[in-house]
Image (tube, rainbow, N blue to C red):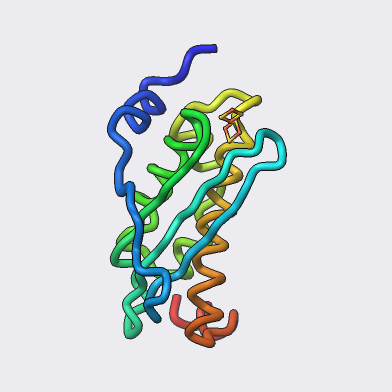
Length: 137
Ligand code: FES
Ligand code: FES
C-alpha cells in the first residue's frame, strides 16, 4: 500500500517531535494506544493560562508512518489554537489532509484521542471545567 506524499513528508520530516515538562502546570499530556495494532502516541501541549491558546505542542509516536504523520500534523494544527478550538479537530480532518486509506483511519483516531487526552490532562491540572472552556471560545 502506497503512502500519500503528505504522509511521506511528515514521516521524513516530523514536526514538533519531543517532550515538554510533564510536571509543569501549563502542560497537558495525552498518552494513548491503539488496540488495533499496539501503537502508542504521546502528545503534549503547553497552554497560555490567560488566553488558553496552545503555544507549544510536542509528540512522540511509536507506530506506523500514518500514526507518525497524524501526530505530526496534529501538533501543527493545535499550535496557535485555543483549547476549545483544538477540541474541534476531528480525525476525519486528518484523514482528509493526509489522504489516509481505510485501514489507516485508526491511526488518525489515535491522534484525535491524543489531542483530547492532552487537553483533558491540562484541564484537570488547572481545574478548568467544560463550561468555562466553552465560554472562552
Ligand atoms: Fe505496526 Fe502500526 S501496526 S506500526
Ligand atoms: Fe496502528 Fe497506524 S496506528 S497502523
